[in-house]
Image (cartoon, rainbow, N blue to C red; front, side, top):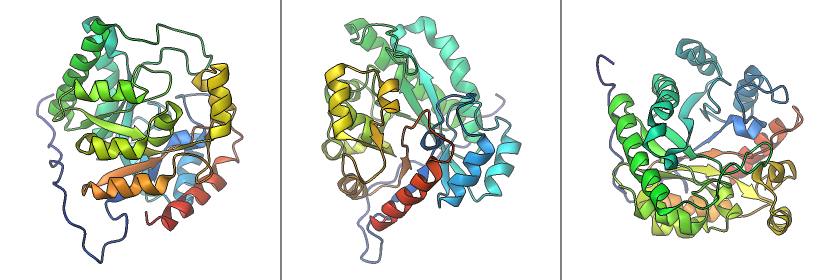
Length: 319
């Protein structure tokens, strides 16, 4: 690149709330293709991208994520026109990485990341959501590798995540937010805190997905209160505790668990989102909170009514 893009402003220090502020004045609500059953760039069981943009705007959202790269147009001029005419803006892009596999995967990882980071920056966003590699396939449930990392793999994961954060910041002016996710190596409270304790807070923040963290046994409020300075982004999601109990008992992989309905419409599941949002508000910094209800695959007419009801629920919470 001939020149560096402008850097995003530094994260603001916590400020006291004024009495006139709304209860969740620092929280910016959005949605994502995931809430329309979109997991892949191209899949006949997914709604066309034009329908997603139409419906997410109709449901009352102003912010969206890019979703899987290639689902939405990758030409920034086209995507800017399509989002702007619907009153939408982009909060983040998403990348999938396997950085625990060592330095030998760096070049292929960067090739994948650079295209997505460039589009994310071109759309005016400042965050890149980084999802670790799945140890079993999210579509078929096939086991791909051991579910537990070796000490060497942990060192590779943390060191290369810091490298990725540095390169993405320097070259694109973006901040990475690492997303703990079911069926990855950053999933449970133990693994999430191990990852946070081993990475540089000035480089690596967390995208706390309330549904995935609950799915893996974590307490989102406790994580926000304990590692507040590391929370850079939120995904709002709930799990159905009854379905989850069956999933755990039968050791069902994440993809088939979603098909069973383990991720459910708020406010019918856990965790309760009001305490999570209140804890995030108390951090005193601006945060995106993007609704993601995993529904792949789903009937094309199912997402919009849920999205409308979820947006109304979040408004009732003050967001």
